[in-house]
Image (cartoon, rainbow, N blue to C red):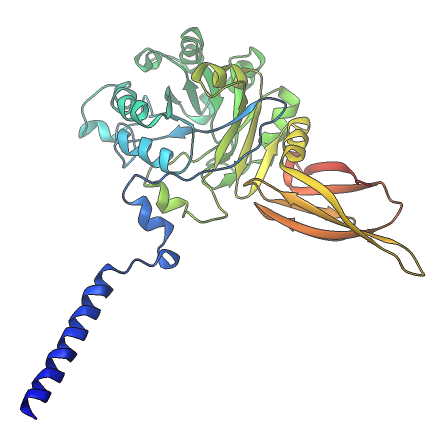
Length: 374
């Protein structure tokens, strides 16, 4: 009897031990969270966007800060964040002035770019040499100069001289957050002169969490490229939690190839779309081409009845930008990588839709006409 009890106890102990050992090594893929994988730095998110008229969608963030101005993050960490978030290109744009970290971090205005460059090359991320020209608003406000060669030369000069120096270096200048710290977007004399002279070619219509419809109107009226940026100072994940249906703000640059020179060329041609909070903002023709490159419609069936015949259709979104359509009074949300069915009376060949999350101007959204297949 004692032998049986000892054997049963040993068997129970072995079972428990084996169970505990097994539990330690169980890996339930369905229960893991995307954010956990991000901690290791080796997982890159894939963002699927359509090519448009033979141009490639290059995912960019042109406004990022590090400890070399008033950010909390080391330059190489900014590269890793952007790579993990699925971006193709970034510009580190530390302030050339108003940089409180200078008391604790040694180095010049080009240091963040020089430190980040080897990490970007290792990960295949395009790193654009940039800086933020920081002035009071009536003196031009904050301007990002991209594709420069030496940020040092933009120091201790007027706004206009700093911008002209940047352009002489091959730079492209963006007007940052025109509505920040004021009630609404305001066009100051300095900004107007720099736009009219062609020295400013782009403006942020979205910055971090602020959306500026008035600035989008300027894009059409003044021939500016619309830009969306994070302007991130802290950890990116503190602002933009990763999920299956949300992305950090970015500028989609439609370029002939994924290279630094092609991005610069596309910016000068105003071939950009701002992407933020599940919305797109930009030129109406570009948005229309982008939309129709993303979706397709197929006829599923025709159901006959005594009153009328009805055609049934399937609209498919094959990419990662959602669309919200108004078909008359009917609202259809076409999520990323999804399909929605709808019906129309037989004989109708076209339908008009208002894509209410695609913005073309202040208080205007994209209107399109669908050709229904037979």
